[in-house]
Length: 331
Image 1 (spheres, rainbow, N blue to C red):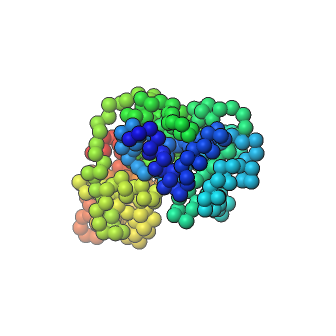
Image 2: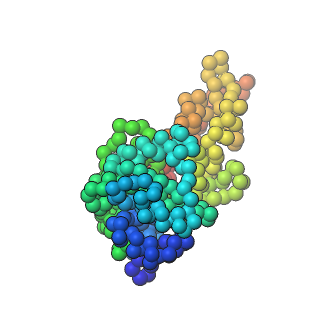
Image 3: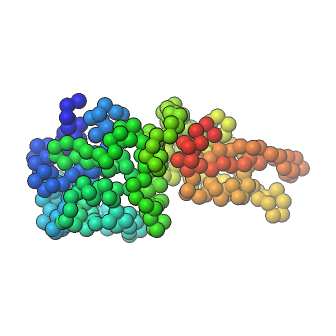
């Protein structure tokens, strides 16, 4: 693929004239950065990024960040993009998004525009001083996302690690719980896209596993689906592993079902039944309720007296996606 062909195809897929956009990007000293630049950089290098970019983040330094004064905003509006209420409608979501962007520092304004095809462009206005390259290096949270295109070519803060699909944290942990939760979710998303996490930026020689060969039986659609796809569809999607089979559930649906199947094996000990008639303790039920974990393994079966007979109780091992991959997946 010739230089920047991947970016040209990406820009035109948004209904934007490539050469006009390219010249505007250069004249405003703006860059496309983040996940879209990362995916297209890897594609240019002949590496499968593991995902298709679904939005475009444009970073620009402007004396005034308002819509009327920003030529990039005016450009996308000219080509049928309309402002969304992404940062206005849902108060909690808007506040969380602002908290995340505020944690990155130096951001004066973020505005989202979308066209009728559902293509989203976010214009992130920084203060008017300094080079955007320095901002990306100093403020981006994950190494591989510190990748950008300035209208002439691609750049990335750590090309060797990025091309090997290794990522690491570039910022210190935040004091804001939401920001840390957001970053951990981003790490998990990229793990599922085939990246490896190492906080020292050094290859850990972890055994590579073809995630696409692991299927989940989706209990909502009653069909097999790649586990990576299932977990990326929604953060509320969780997986129960029973022996060698993976079952996919919506967390709330599963929790509501199991709460409805609560029984007492004594006056003070309660257990909960899965749709496949395995029972777990109340302590393990709390793990299933927690949105910290996404993958659960039922193991170490034991029997307890129940209604004149015996019933099997399973222990639960709970994993974030990162914990699961670090454990070698075959847990």
